[in-house]
Image 1: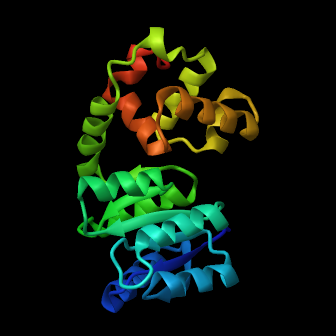
Image 2 (image 1 turned 90 degrees about the horizontal axis):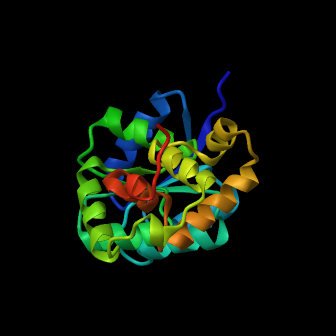
Length: 221
């Protein structure tokens, strides 16, 4: 039997929390262990329950979503945090990704798409709402002054790792695909982030998809 992921909902709208709880419970993949209306309550409950996945709204009274996200990434970094918000604002998306969000999804998502995206995040894959991919790629174009292979200097293993990240593979799946350890994959990811001046797996995937992978003499053929 497939193990269930323990899920914590943090959102200040009770009707939305109830709908999300019903959606995820009915999937058979998640167990909703908590549903709270504020970042402070979410932090308190997370300390007690250590959930596998947190669905987090950005804009809430009191301790807002961004501060809550930063707390999770500092104090419970093993928890996958998926931002679910109505905001597609450039500054919100970039701030959340730089703070380490494992996913950034919009509240107008179709239920099936939302469930699939959160499931992917629970399995270690980063997910960004499709409507935001162009925004992220545009931001990377502005930051990246034409980085090519002569400047980036990716190794063959780093290029292979980047290609698999772009396909949505988790570290564990990348390790299995390349026949290396999870720890070695983490080292490659760290090197990629440093060499490309990026801060998250989602930014790595966007960089690869917008052409950076081919520019770095890349991808798996």
